[in-house]
Amino acid sequence: MTTGLFYHPDCLKHDMGYGHPERPERLTAVMKYLKERKVFDDVNITLQKPPAVTLSDLEQVHPKDYIDLIHNASDREARLDADTRTSKGSFTAALLAAGAGIKAWQEIQAGNLKNAFALIRPPGHHANAQSARGFCLFNNISVLARHITTTIPDSRVLILDIDAHHGNGSQEIHYTESNTLYLGFHQDGRTLYPGYSGYTDELGEGPGRGYTVNLPLPPGTTDLSFLQALSTIFPPIVEQFQPTAILVSAGYDGHFRDYQTNLQFSATAYFKATQLVMELAQKISKGQTVMFLEGGYELRALSESIYNTLVAMSGHGDPVSEKPPTEDSRIKKYITMLLAETKKALKPWWKISK
Ligand SMILES: [Zn+2]
Image (cartoon, rainbow, N blue to C red):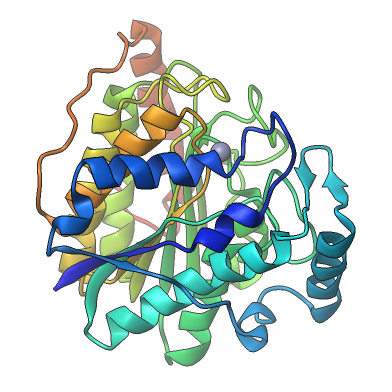
Protein backbone atom coordinates (compact mmCIF):
# COMPACT_ATOMS: atom_id res chain seq x y z
CA MET A 1 0.00 0.00 0.00
CA THR A 2 1.16 3.46 -0.85
CA THR A 3 1.21 6.99 0.52
CA GLY A 4 -1.04 9.39 -1.41
CA LEU A 5 0.21 12.86 -2.25
CA PHE A 6 -2.70 15.13 -3.15
CA TYR A 7 -1.89 18.14 -5.29
CA HIS A 8 -3.88 20.24 -7.78
CA PRO A 9 -2.36 22.98 -9.98
CA ASP A 10 -5.47 25.10 -9.44
CA CYS A 11 -4.30 25.62 -5.84
CA LEU A 12 -1.75 27.98 -7.44
CA LYS A 13 -4.56 30.28 -8.60
CA HIS A 14 -5.09 31.63 -5.10
CA ASP A 15 -2.83 34.68 -5.02
CA MET A 16 -2.72 37.18 -2.14
CA GLY A 17 -0.52 39.64 -4.00
CA TYR A 18 3.12 40.42 -4.62
CA GLY A 19 5.36 39.89 -1.61
CA HIS A 20 2.86 37.86 0.41
CA PRO A 21 4.65 34.96 2.15
CA GLU A 22 1.80 32.50 1.52
CA ARG A 23 2.46 32.43 -2.23
CA PRO A 24 1.90 29.95 -5.08
CA GLU A 25 5.68 29.36 -5.33
CA ARG A 26 5.48 27.41 -2.07
CA LEU A 27 3.79 24.54 -3.89
CA THR A 28 5.71 24.80 -7.17
CA ALA A 29 9.04 24.75 -5.28
CA VAL A 30 7.99 21.65 -3.33
CA MET A 31 6.78 19.85 -6.46
CA LYS A 32 10.01 20.71 -8.29
CA TYR A 33 12.10 19.43 -5.39
CA LEU A 34 10.08 16.22 -5.07
CA LYS A 35 10.52 15.59 -8.81
CA GLU A 36 14.29 16.14 -8.51
CA ARG A 37 14.36 13.64 -5.67
CA LYS A 38 12.45 11.23 -7.95
CA VAL A 39 9.67 10.86 -5.42
CA PHE A 40 7.14 10.21 -8.18
CA ASP A 41 9.20 7.34 -9.59
CA ASP A 42 8.82 5.68 -6.21
CA VAL A 43 6.13 3.02 -6.27
CA ASN A 44 5.43 3.78 -2.61
CA ILE A 45 4.07 7.27 -3.32
CA THR A 46 1.08 8.00 -5.57
CA LEU A 47 0.33 11.47 -6.89
CA GLN A 48 -3.39 12.26 -7.09
CA LYS A 49 -5.48 15.30 -8.03
CA PRO A 50 -8.16 16.08 -5.45
CA PRO A 51 -11.72 17.03 -6.39
CA ALA A 52 -13.48 20.09 -4.94
CA VAL A 53 -15.11 19.51 -1.56
CA THR A 54 -18.87 18.96 -1.67
CA LEU A 55 -21.07 21.66 -0.18
CA SER A 56 -22.54 19.19 2.31
CA ASP A 57 -19.07 18.31 3.67
CA LEU A 58 -18.04 21.97 3.81
CA GLU A 59 -21.28 22.93 5.59
CA GLN A 60 -20.46 20.53 8.42
CA VAL A 61 -17.99 23.23 9.55
CA HIS A 62 -18.81 26.48 7.74
CA PRO A 63 -22.32 27.99 7.51
CA LYS A 64 -23.72 28.57 4.03
CA ASP A 65 -23.57 32.38 4.34
CA TYR A 66 -19.85 32.21 5.15
CA ILE A 67 -19.20 29.96 2.13
CA ASP A 68 -21.09 32.48 -0.04
CA LEU A 69 -19.05 35.30 1.48
CA ILE A 70 -15.78 33.58 0.45
CA HIS A 71 -17.21 32.90 -3.02
CA ASN A 72 -18.18 36.57 -3.46
CA ALA A 73 -14.91 37.82 -1.95
CA SER A 74 -13.06 35.68 -4.47
CA ASP A 75 -14.96 37.28 -7.37
CA ARG A 76 -14.29 40.76 -5.97
CA GLU A 77 -10.63 40.15 -4.94
CA ALA A 78 -11.22 41.35 -1.39
CA ARG A 79 -9.24 41.84 1.82
CA LEU A 80 -10.63 39.62 4.58
CA ASP A 81 -8.30 40.48 7.46
CA ALA A 82 -4.97 42.27 7.90
CA ASP A 83 -3.05 39.55 6.06
CA THR A 84 -5.68 37.44 4.26
CA ARG A 85 -6.83 38.34 0.76
CA THR A 86 -8.60 36.67 -2.13
CA SER A 87 -8.02 36.59 -5.88
CA LYS A 88 -10.28 35.30 -8.65
CA GLY A 89 -8.97 31.74 -8.20
CA SER A 90 -9.20 31.67 -4.40
CA PHE A 91 -12.60 30.02 -4.08
CA THR A 92 -11.66 27.19 -6.46
CA ALA A 93 -8.33 26.66 -4.66
CA ALA A 94 -10.04 26.66 -1.26
CA LEU A 95 -12.60 24.06 -2.38
CA LEU A 96 -9.79 21.82 -3.66
CA ALA A 97 -7.76 22.28 -0.46
CA ALA A 98 -10.72 21.11 1.63
CA GLY A 99 -11.60 18.40 -0.90
CA ALA A 100 -8.10 16.88 -0.75
CA GLY A 101 -8.51 15.70 2.84
CA ILE A 102 -11.89 14.09 2.19
CA LYS A 103 -10.67 12.32 -0.95
CA ALA A 104 -7.54 11.14 0.85
CA TRP A 105 -9.66 9.70 3.64
CA GLN A 106 -11.99 7.94 1.18
CA GLU A 107 -9.01 6.36 -0.58
CA ILE A 108 -7.63 5.16 2.75
CA GLN A 109 -11.04 3.72 3.69
CA ALA A 110 -11.28 1.95 0.33
CA GLY A 111 -7.92 0.29 1.00
CA ASN A 112 -6.20 2.06 -1.91
CA LEU A 113 -3.79 4.11 0.23
CA LYS A 114 -2.16 3.53 3.59
CA ASN A 115 -1.96 7.24 4.46
CA ALA A 116 -1.88 10.62 2.68
CA PHE A 117 -0.37 14.08 2.56
CA ALA A 118 -2.44 17.01 1.26
CA LEU A 119 -0.01 19.39 -0.48
CA ILE A 120 -2.54 22.19 -0.70
CA ARG A 121 -3.12 25.91 -0.23
CA PRO A 122 -4.74 28.02 1.09
CA PRO A 123 -3.91 26.54 4.51
CA GLY A 124 -6.71 26.17 7.04
CA HIS A 125 -5.91 26.01 10.77
CA HIS A 126 -6.54 29.71 11.59
CA ALA A 127 -9.98 29.79 9.94
CA ASN A 128 -12.86 29.18 12.32
CA ALA A 129 -16.45 28.47 11.29
CA GLN A 130 -17.20 32.07 10.30
CA SER A 131 -13.93 33.92 9.78
CA ALA A 132 -11.02 33.83 7.36
CA ARG A 133 -7.85 34.65 9.25
CA GLY A 134 -4.09 34.27 9.09
CA PHE A 135 -3.89 33.27 5.37
CA CYS A 136 -6.72 30.69 5.84
CA LEU A 137 -10.18 30.57 4.19
CA PHE A 138 -11.73 27.17 5.03
CA ASN A 139 -10.48 24.96 7.83
CA ASN A 140 -9.37 21.96 5.76
CA ILE A 141 -8.46 19.68 8.65
CA SER A 142 -11.68 20.39 10.58
CA VAL A 143 -13.75 19.63 7.46
CA LEU A 144 -12.22 16.13 7.39
CA ALA A 145 -12.51 15.71 11.17
CA ARG A 146 -16.26 16.45 10.96
CA HIS A 147 -16.64 14.20 7.92
CA ILE A 148 -15.17 11.32 9.93
CA THR A 149 -17.11 11.93 13.14
CA THR A 150 -20.41 12.38 11.29
CA THR A 151 -20.05 9.37 8.98
CA ILE A 152 -18.51 6.77 11.33
CA PRO A 153 -20.52 6.02 14.48
CA ASP A 154 -18.58 6.47 17.75
CA SER A 155 -15.47 7.61 15.92
CA ARG A 156 -12.82 9.86 17.43
CA VAL A 157 -10.33 12.12 15.69
CA LEU A 158 -7.07 13.44 17.07
CA ILE A 159 -5.81 16.65 15.44
CA LEU A 160 -2.09 17.07 16.03
CA ASP A 161 -0.98 20.58 15.07
CA ILE A 162 2.77 21.16 14.73
CA ASP A 163 2.67 24.45 12.79
CA ALA A 164 4.67 27.17 14.57
CA HIS A 165 1.49 29.22 15.01
CA HIS A 166 -1.33 28.09 17.27
CA GLY A 167 -4.22 26.49 15.34
CA ASN A 168 -6.78 28.80 16.89
CA GLY A 169 -9.41 28.06 14.22
CA SER A 170 -9.24 24.29 14.69
CA GLN A 171 -9.29 24.71 18.47
CA GLU A 172 -12.35 27.00 18.37
CA ILE A 173 -14.29 24.73 15.99
CA HIS A 174 -13.87 21.65 18.21
CA TYR A 175 -13.66 23.35 21.63
CA THR A 176 -16.84 21.78 23.04
CA GLU A 177 -16.45 18.35 21.43
CA SER A 178 -15.21 15.18 23.08
CA ASN A 179 -14.93 13.20 19.84
CA THR A 180 -12.27 15.51 18.36
CA LEU A 181 -9.17 16.21 20.41
CA TYR A 182 -6.96 19.16 19.48
CA LEU A 183 -3.29 18.85 20.51
CA GLY A 184 -1.10 21.81 19.54
CA PHE A 185 2.67 22.34 19.74
CA HIS A 186 3.50 25.91 18.70
CA GLN A 187 5.51 28.99 19.57
CA ASP A 188 4.24 30.73 22.71
CA GLY A 189 1.50 33.22 21.80
CA ARG A 190 3.18 35.95 23.84
CA THR A 191 5.76 36.09 21.06
CA LEU A 192 3.83 35.13 17.89
CA TYR A 193 0.52 35.40 15.99
CA PRO A 194 -2.32 34.79 16.85
CA GLY A 195 -1.21 35.73 20.36
CA TYR A 196 -4.44 35.49 22.32
CA SER A 197 -4.65 31.71 22.29
CA GLY A 198 -2.75 28.45 22.63
CA TYR A 199 -1.99 28.57 26.35
CA THR A 200 -1.92 25.64 28.77
CA ASP A 201 -5.11 26.69 30.57
CA GLU A 202 -7.23 26.34 27.40
CA LEU A 203 -8.59 22.83 27.94
CA GLY A 204 -11.95 22.83 26.15
CA GLU A 205 -15.44 23.55 27.45
CA GLY A 206 -18.53 21.56 28.49
CA PRO A 207 -18.31 18.01 27.09
CA GLY A 208 -15.09 19.09 25.34
CA ARG A 209 -13.29 19.78 28.63
CA GLY A 210 -9.98 17.89 28.56
CA TYR A 211 -10.06 17.52 24.76
CA THR A 212 -7.96 20.60 23.95
CA VAL A 213 -4.28 20.47 24.88
CA ASN A 214 -1.71 23.19 24.19
CA LEU A 215 2.07 23.17 24.51
CA PRO A 216 3.33 26.73 23.94
CA LEU A 217 7.05 26.46 23.18
CA PRO A 218 9.46 29.31 23.88
CA PRO A 219 11.27 31.08 21.00
CA GLY A 220 14.54 29.29 20.30
CA THR A 221 13.15 25.78 20.90
CA THR A 222 15.05 23.28 18.73
CA ASP A 223 14.50 19.63 17.77
CA LEU A 224 15.75 18.59 21.18
CA SER A 225 13.02 20.13 23.34
CA PHE A 226 10.28 19.90 20.70
CA LEU A 227 10.75 16.15 20.32
CA GLN A 228 11.00 15.75 24.07
CA ALA A 229 7.68 17.55 24.55
CA LEU A 230 6.02 15.67 21.69
CA SER A 231 7.19 12.23 22.84
CA THR A 232 6.10 12.93 26.43
CA ILE A 233 2.57 14.16 25.72
CA PHE A 234 1.43 12.73 22.38
CA PRO A 235 1.82 8.90 22.85
CA PRO A 236 -0.07 8.58 26.16
CA ILE A 237 -2.93 10.75 24.88
CA VAL A 238 -3.22 8.68 21.68
CA GLU A 239 -3.16 5.46 23.69
CA GLN A 240 -5.90 6.62 26.04
CA PHE A 241 -8.04 8.50 23.48
CA GLN A 242 -7.87 5.64 20.93
CA PRO A 243 -8.56 7.81 17.85
CA THR A 244 -10.10 6.33 14.70
CA ALA A 245 -7.79 8.66 12.73
CA ILE A 246 -4.85 10.92 13.46
CA LEU A 247 -4.93 14.10 11.37
CA VAL A 248 -1.93 16.40 11.34
CA SER A 249 -1.73 20.12 10.68
CA ALA A 250 1.75 19.98 9.22
CA GLY A 251 3.18 23.47 9.23
CA TYR A 252 6.89 23.86 8.53
CA ASP A 253 7.35 27.46 9.63
CA GLY A 254 9.08 26.22 12.80
CA HIS A 255 12.15 25.46 10.67
CA PHE A 256 15.20 27.46 11.80
CA ARG A 257 15.57 29.11 8.38
CA ASP A 258 11.93 30.22 8.23
CA TYR A 259 11.77 33.97 8.82
CA GLN A 260 8.15 34.01 10.04
CA THR A 261 8.78 32.50 13.48
CA ASN A 262 11.46 32.01 16.14
CA LEU A 263 11.35 28.24 16.52
CA GLN A 264 14.56 26.47 15.51
CA PHE A 265 13.59 23.05 14.16
CA SER A 266 15.58 21.24 11.48
CA ALA A 267 14.21 19.11 8.62
CA THR A 268 15.22 16.11 10.76
CA ALA A 269 12.72 17.14 13.45
CA TYR A 270 9.88 16.80 10.93
CA PHE A 271 11.14 13.34 9.95
CA LYS A 272 11.28 12.19 13.57
CA ALA A 273 7.94 13.76 14.50
CA THR A 274 6.26 12.07 11.51
CA GLN A 275 7.87 8.74 12.42
CA LEU A 276 6.38 9.00 15.89
CA VAL A 277 2.94 9.81 14.43
CA MET A 278 3.17 6.81 12.06
CA GLU A 279 4.23 4.49 14.86
CA LEU A 280 1.29 5.50 17.06
CA ALA A 281 -1.19 5.54 14.16
CA GLN A 282 -0.10 2.03 13.19
CA LYS A 283 -0.57 0.80 16.74
CA ILE A 284 -3.86 2.52 17.57
CA SER A 285 -5.56 3.92 14.44
CA LYS A 286 -4.90 1.27 11.76
CA GLY A 287 -2.31 3.65 10.33
CA GLN A 288 -5.10 6.00 9.21
CA THR A 289 -3.37 9.35 8.94
CA VAL A 290 -3.90 12.39 6.73
CA MET A 291 -1.42 15.24 6.98
CA PHE A 292 -2.32 18.74 5.76
CA LEU A 293 0.14 21.41 4.70
CA GLU A 294 -0.34 24.55 6.78
CA GLY A 295 2.53 27.11 6.96
CA GLY A 296 6.18 27.02 5.88
CA TYR A 297 7.61 29.92 3.91
CA GLU A 298 11.33 29.30 3.33
CA LEU A 299 11.15 27.30 0.13
CA ARG A 300 14.18 25.04 0.54
CA ALA A 301 13.40 24.28 4.19
CA LEU A 302 9.77 23.62 3.25
CA SER A 303 10.73 21.28 0.39
CA GLU A 304 13.25 19.26 2.39
CA SER A 305 10.95 19.03 5.40
CA ILE A 306 8.00 17.81 3.31
CA TYR A 307 10.30 15.31 1.60
CA ASN A 308 11.32 14.04 5.05
CA THR A 309 7.66 13.78 6.04
CA LEU A 310 6.94 11.66 2.96
CA VAL A 311 9.92 9.39 3.66
CA ALA A 312 8.54 8.76 7.16
CA MET A 313 4.97 8.28 5.90
CA SER A 314 5.89 5.84 3.14
CA GLY A 315 8.63 4.11 5.12
CA HIS A 316 10.92 4.30 2.07
CA GLY A 317 13.89 6.44 1.07
CA ASP A 318 16.51 8.33 3.03
CA PRO A 319 15.61 11.53 4.85
CA VAL A 320 17.61 14.73 4.48
CA SER A 321 19.77 14.94 7.58
CA GLU A 322 20.14 18.34 9.17
CA LYS A 323 21.29 19.71 12.53
CA PRO A 324 19.39 22.51 14.25
CA PRO A 325 21.24 25.43 15.88
CA THR A 326 22.43 24.86 19.46
CA GLU A 327 19.64 25.18 21.99
CA ASP A 328 20.02 27.62 24.87
CA SER A 329 20.26 25.60 28.11
CA ARG A 330 17.45 27.67 29.65
CA ILE A 331 14.99 26.21 27.14
CA LYS A 332 15.42 22.65 28.40
CA LYS A 333 14.68 23.86 31.94
CA TYR A 334 11.64 25.78 30.75
CA ILE A 335 10.31 22.74 28.86
CA THR A 336 10.74 20.53 31.94
CA MET A 337 8.63 23.03 33.88
CA LEU A 338 6.07 23.30 31.06
CA LEU A 339 5.69 19.53 30.87
CA ALA A 340 5.22 19.25 34.64
CA GLU A 341 2.56 21.99 34.52
CA THR A 342 0.82 20.30 31.56
CA LYS A 343 0.78 16.88 33.23
CA LYS A 344 -0.80 18.43 36.31
CA ALA A 345 -3.43 20.32 34.30
CA LEU A 346 -4.34 17.19 32.31
CA LYS A 347 -4.54 14.88 35.33
CA PRO A 348 -8.37 14.70 35.48
CA TRP A 349 -8.46 13.37 31.89
CA TRP A 350 -5.09 11.96 30.83
CA LYS A 351 -2.44 10.03 32.68
CA ILE A 352 1.00 11.13 31.47
CA SER A 353 3.44 8.85 33.28
CA LYS A 354 6.80 9.84 31.74
ZN1 LIG B 1 2.16 28.90 10.77
